[in-house]
Length: 225
Image (cartoon, rainbow, N blue to C red; front, side, top):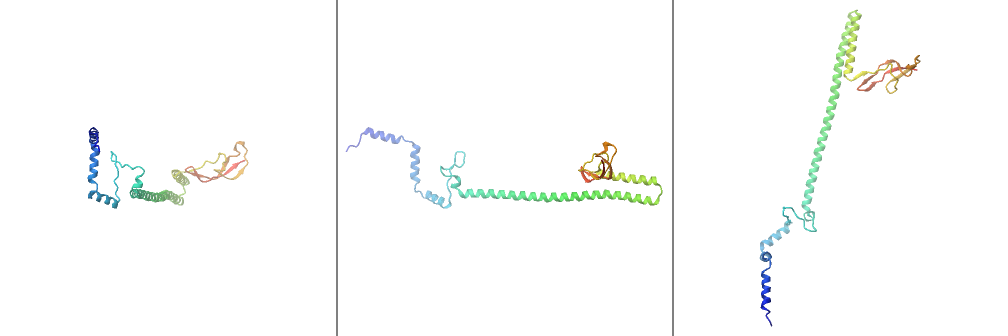
């Protein structure tokens, strides 16, 4: 039996020796470490703890294996993240709800105090006018000077009108205005001689008042026809 051509044997040996040295090193390491006790213990430990080596790219980010998503590979971690997000959102909602409830209660309290203090201010100013009326009545019983009494009453009336204006209340103009059923209350009608007075307010029985452009008492008027 022929042992082969020496030239062919040399070519085969050269070809094997010229292969990639890195591949030969890795192959050698694999053979050496295969069956090593430490490697077997690491493998068993990974199986028991569920730890899996996650492949990383050059920037250190996790790389998903083909056909297997991160959620499928680590369902426990995904559930943990979802629970953490749920707790954060729930805590944010509870805080926001508590802040809104406090704001609503504080606003209602401030509104009630504002209404109460506003009423107190108006009453205090009204009491000052009552004091003027009491002094006028006292003078009326003690003196016969009609002119002085009229002057005092005019002064009180002027102060009272000023007080109403300061609180946004003013008298409504009626006489000489076209009749408007939305603003005036017609008590009766009377015939007029002039054509221009027909449909106009010719007299006012009771004055009307507005408060901040809102009618708080409708005037009672007489309309010409």
